[in-house]
Length: 134
Image (tube, rainbow, N blue to C red):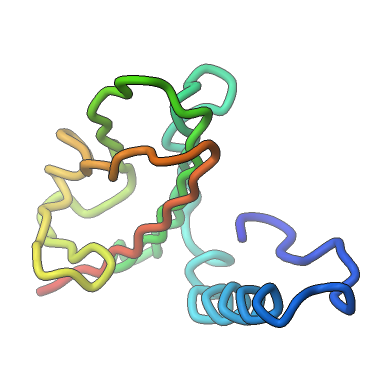
């Protein structure tokens, strides 16, 4: 969703399950369109130097929302505990992640980082939606 969002494939050859997945991806893109197209873009890690994962974020100009995308690399035995240090948030605001119950202060997410789920498979994708709660 960061850049040219589209599918370079023959949709007529997709299974019903694949088409349903694509519908869900398009709905997610439409729901976050303004954030993706008008938000500030932050590269959170480099695909050239960080081999455990690559991450980027779109943060709304008013810093009330953020959409974070992350793709892991290859699974390794005994992968270390990972934290993702975010950028561009308001340090004084509290953020809810993926509509969960726990709140995280912007300063904490940027300095200490957000704990990432355990890597289960190669090239696992994770998306986090952050919403400021006042």
